[in-house]
Structure formats: structure tokens, C-alpha cells
Image 1 (cartoon, rainbow, N blue to C red):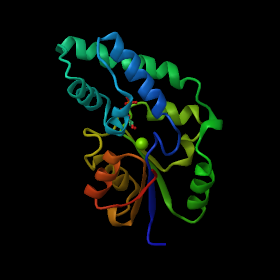
Image 2 (cartoon, helix red, strand yellow):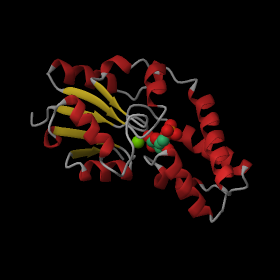
Image 3 (spheres, rainbow, N blue to C red):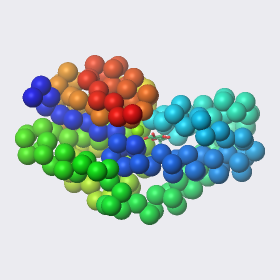
Image 4 (tube, protein in one colour):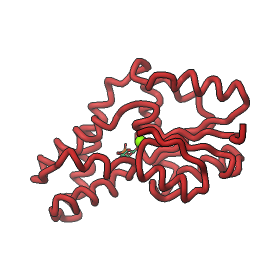
Length: 189
Ligand code: BG6
Ligand code: MG
């Protein structure tokens, strides 16, 4: 096999949390007088929380003050954390756990590459924390997808050259990030 490491996106690849993100954005947006449209979901996928909010405000043509923006971000995450509390091992995408175990048995390193600052909480809820050699996520990077940092950070910690890493992604921003990191990318649509 050409690859020495596989880096998995979390939201939408390991576990389907997109509807929770969407619900939390929609509810908090309404509270701040913003008209949220479901069709914006794809555009927000993979962007970090602040970037998602800025995109949302642009799409809805709504202006918020600096203080309101902070409150909006806080509220969205509060709602999101409430929603994910129900996650457990049963919601892991079919085949994911088996695939990771198989890769590791074959000497392939595994990592998570996620923009989410809640990645560790989610991995703990679904019982997968120990399956990865490294978790590159919102709290240990500066710039989220589509910047390549999240994947390059994972490769550096795994001590694997980017050309020998395969990224598994479901979002456009993540595919761009993988391309910019000069890594091959398997896209799950
Ligand atoms: C990504 C999701 O994984 O994490 C985005 O695809 C989300 O939709 C981003 O905005 C940031 O998540 P969090 O948990 O830090 O708000
Ligand atoms: Mg994703």
C-alpha cells in the first residue's frame, strides 16, 4: 500500500453530526433574528465555528455587533453540546471502527483531522479516542479547513510525509485542505 497513514475527518465521516450543527445554527440564528436556510449547510461544512458564523451572516445579509457575535457563537455551541450529549458507540458510521482496527493491524497509522473544537468530547462519547495515534483538531491548530494546517499537523505528529497520507473527507473545505496539504483524498459524498 502506498499510504503510511490515514487521516479521517470526524463530522460526517466517523459520525454524522451535521444535522446537530445545522439544528444548533438554525435555533441560535433565529434567536438572533437571522433567517437560516437549510441549503446553506454544504457551504458551512468543515469551516470552523467563527468562520461558519461569518459565512452565515454574509449569506443572510445580517450585521451583528462584536458583542452579539460572541454571544451568537456561545449560544450555538451551547445548543450543539446539548444535542451531542446523546451520542454513543452505536452512532459510529458503519465499518469505520473495523476499518481503523484493520489499518492499524497492517501498520498504517491513523489520525483524526477535524476543525471542531469539540472533537475530543465527541470521540470520548463514541468510545473511539484510543483508536487513533493522534487527534488533530480545533484546539491544537490555528487555521481550520480549507487551510491545510489540520492535516499537516497530523502528518507531522505521525512522522509521515504528506505524500504518504490519505485523507477521508465529506466536505468541500476538507477536500481543498487535503489538496493544499498535497495529500490524496477519498471523498465521501
Ligand atoms: C467541522 C464541521 O467538523 O467542525 C463544521 O464540519 C463545524 O460544521 C466545525 O462548524 C467546528 O465545530 P465546533 O464543534 O468547533 O463548533
Ligand atoms: Mg466533515
